[in-house]
Image (cartoon, rainbow, N blue to C red; front, top):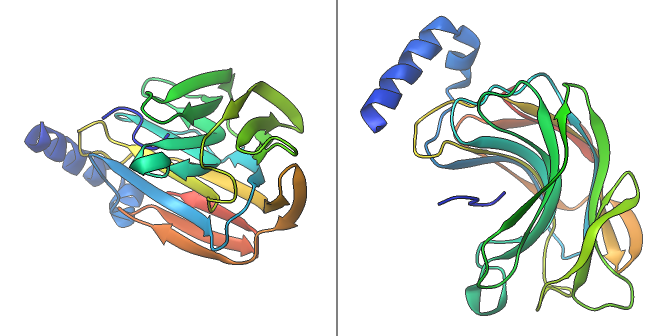
Length: 228
């Protein structure tokens, strides 16, 4: 959910109290009032991305949201610097001890559209999730869950052969400096080498992690991300 929705002193004091009560969080030194990410990005352009995504533990969201997702595009990635993306994964919000399965689409000059596929999912839930440009339909994308199409095909202008896929966790503090707690496992991350498929394990990539959120590589294309 890149920038899904665009008290500092009070929130900082609350976080300090929380960290004193929770040494593990204090060691992690995490916290952000805005967005923070930890994941992998493909070094090459591709036509889709897939992974076996698992919720590890119960997310604890103090403010904003957390998510683990795969997708393409992002803020400024559309025509003339517009926001354009498609992604699918798990999300969690304050007051919930479970996760939701969702996908999100941002079209140029439009607000991001969040679609909930399933809710009330317990820790340990695993789904194979993917976004893929369709064969024979240049610039048309679709979301897949457990190899079944979800929702309608989406036209994203200028997207054909233009984007480098991401597999990442995300947290948003909604303006309050908080340490949202979560962890996701990304298994056998793969990218599509042509519209419609041609799947290959992700090998050429870069890592990113900030605000105390980290990744831990398990194999070449499998990793954990979040509070580790």
